[in-house]
Length: 107
Image (cartoon, rainbow, N blue to C red; front, side, top):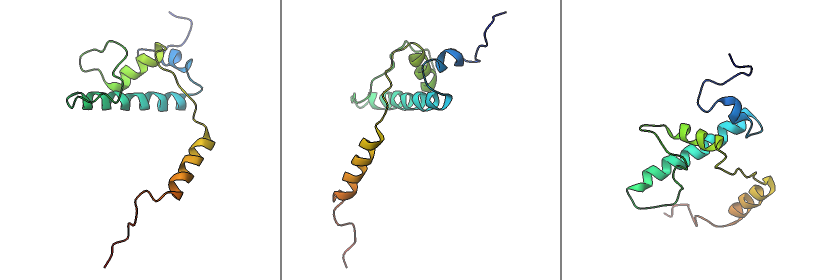
């Protein structure tokens, strides 16, 4: 019997939590990467390479979230914090810009 608690998935939740600040951060981190992997597979047939494919060897019918969690556990991804002020500045710039032009229908 092991002396430390282990998770029920591979990689274990315990080793994954060592890479992030909280369970919630891990969920967001894994979900964003899984969406990128999904988008990569969706764009393959179109010849577009906007997203990076899996960085680990994938198994047959493996879910994108499982792939993402193995990448996180392997230390293959770099997580960057978002500056809230930069987000606010970008949102303000979009509010000020006439992005959509005149959206009111004319009679």
